[in-house]
Image (cartoon, rainbow, N blue to C red; front, side):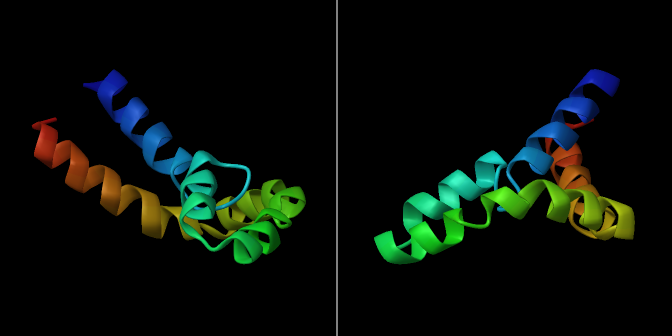
Length: 76
């Protein structure tokens, strides 16, 4: 149960559309070429943005509700 929750949190976190996370690669692949290039330029600031959002508690508003829904769906 704990291992499943840890994996759910990591999966949801990694799918956030913030460069350099994998979710940004998905979004970038769906954008028009020029927009994707501009979007990918933000990658150098991504780590700072991620830490800032973690510090402000913003991810608690996004990650935990999604994890809770997925956990209920999986029966955890």
